[in-house]
Image (tube, rainbow, N blue to C red):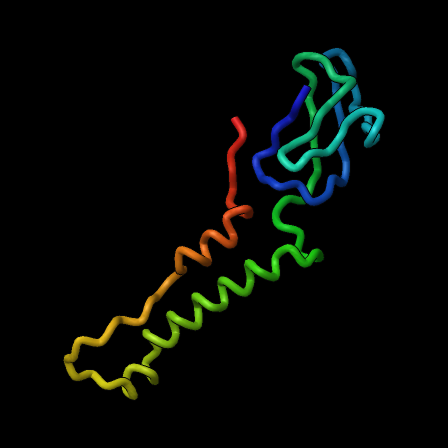
Length: 125
């Protein structure tokens, strides 16, 4: 069986327990023998229909790895553009005369969104 988790990707699994319909207590499962952890959920091997499965896991982007540094950089760049255009101190220093001046781009640029596309959340149904 495949158990899909609500939050993905899975960073680590603390424990997995299974309680059968006729069992009075839950049994702790071991990684490798009873289940395999995937990014989207867990592949369970020794379970039956209608068993109660409890998974304690941590999900999200792994902050200990360097895979989020590019994402943080994109967010900081977009935030600095917003502050540059909208901050009260900056507005007072800008030339507010009407000329054909190209507006400064705010928010995320298409190039930035494409560079972090692999971290978007994809639902597996």
